[in-house]
Image (cartoon, rainbow, N blue to C red; front, side):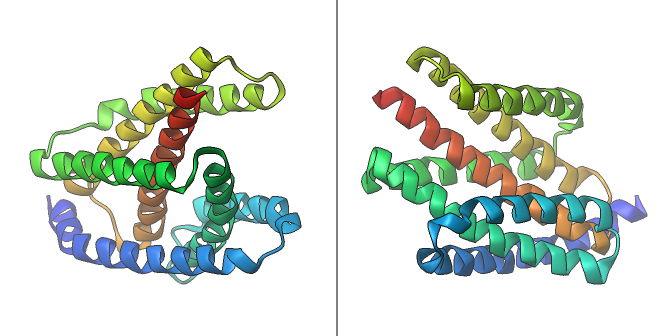
Length: 210
């Protein structure tokens, strides 16, 4: 109980760090406009490398926060290339609508998890296994393009999975203890929940239009 109480005291810090991290990501996104497209793939590799490093070094406070902000900056850079490709495919208006839907879905889900204080930890195993399946399906889709119906099903599945991750991660904030050293990984997890939800919504819109 003492651990949970101390975690509740750290909640405002989690949201402050999340806000600062989003600003860092936004700066990266804006700078992405002047980054040559040829650097997109190396940046994706750096982004994945930073995430892996954060997973292993997250308990070292001085390193964890540095890795987190570095990851957010690089993620902002790579997001620019992704968003530009979706704008060329769907148009700016539809991408903005997708962003609005993502914000509402993410915000509503997060608020429900926090206010209800329900325990969604039972979703952990299912979400992990489903995410692996989702990654494998996405990789297969790179080499064997899906039909419109299959693409709708995969993107819809992705939306449900990351709504589930949002419930899971925000439930952990209110029901399980965490320390200051855990905050960088918590912030990155929340960020990835939203980003992936947004991207799968855009993917769903693209498949619907096709």
